[in-house]
Image (tube, rainbow, N blue to C red; front, top):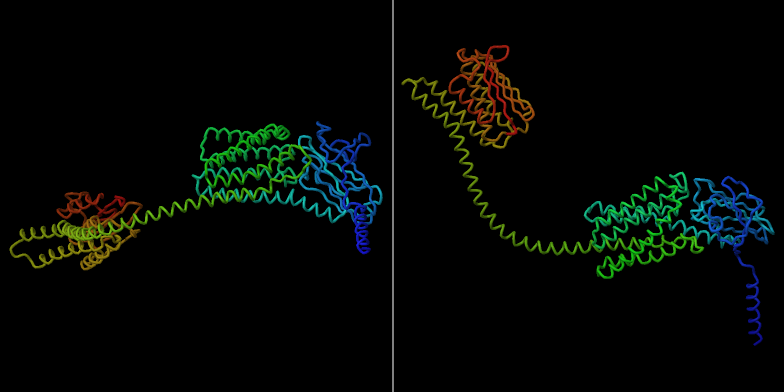
Length: 609
């Protein structure tokens, strides 16, 4: 019993000592404030007014752009003990003095103002800067009345507690905002790439556009200066314009996602967004300070659009629309809190929209996966149906192809025989008829050499037919090889030097019929030089010039008969050459060689024919 009473007494003593102990952190909410000009290096001596923190000075001095000085005092027990000092909020830029000594200063306290409003300020104070007894904190806040300039509460006390609170606030108000911006840009890039690969899915392009400008607006929560703009008005007008474009693109995205096409409405909406952005860049001095005149109605419009989409998602029964609507609900609720912070309806300073970005990432990821899965199901069903149809068609086609193959073989053989008959009829047949006629008109006792000459002509013509038929798809250069060999052998046996000049013939194909006509024409020209020209030298030039084929045969013989200068004289042989040239679609010229005796045969063909 006694032991129990002693224990209870000890517990009461411990609780009493705990209640009597001073708090680890003291919050200062009472201060004095006085306004001054931009260039003031010290506060005025007169004009101080008592204020309660957190303080927004536009309610007290609605037309004041410049500097407001805040003065706070507190009692410090032990100056030797390290003490933490946490300034919750300073908008827009500030300098901090403790007991007359400067302990912190933003880079620019005049326009363009530094932007330090989105993070708290923490300092570790100790002697001799920290005094035992009364300490005075003086804070110079620079701001513009249009952008809620203010000074938040001040906490003094346990360094470990305040440092932990500072880190938590930086994480919420800066680090998560930065992460949110990075996630947004990555998501915009992924969805944008998806749109680039599938342009007909325009809604993804609109979402990417909305995400890009939305994240550009979010840089307002992490930017430390208004760069690249030279004034705070320029920066605020720009991010307000980004918000307008993001809101317009987001509205079009939800319309397209809901399978609604309102071209006129979309053009008007994006036109207004373009006008707002242009006005922000051209007239920032108005668009920045008066941004609430167009942003507040736009925010209300976005709420209407969002709730309308949620109603559509519930009615449509589409799973992807319902998931996306569910991912929009929480951001909408959080945005109400952020709107209150933005409008200054209550004393909060933290924007919580960054916590909701993973939800949109999850929602868009589900939309893509859901649509991909549905597409794959349709593809698999189509493949199964197609496989069945292909099997049936394959069996029918196999039977048809077997019959067609046999028919094509027969046609191919018949075509080959017909081509051979035509070549024999047109070439060798003509030579044979001519030889028979010459034999019939020859004397009774025709010399043996003449008969052998006729037989050789028939043999050479037959070889041309065989070479052109066997090498139907060969290059012209390959088809010239047999003719070149036989002609060179014949001319050299007659004491005639032969010079061949072939240029750029690789890849030239004339087809069987034209190749045969060209070879016969060349054979006739070389035979004339051998028989009639009494030449000692023959030059054969065959070359390609663009899409033209040029043939030139020169000899140094006695030339053409004087009775028909410059003409294609020479009897049946010359007439045959002209016929072949016309059949090939070429232009044949036969005349004297330039600057010397002899004969020149020229032929030009169009390879594109």
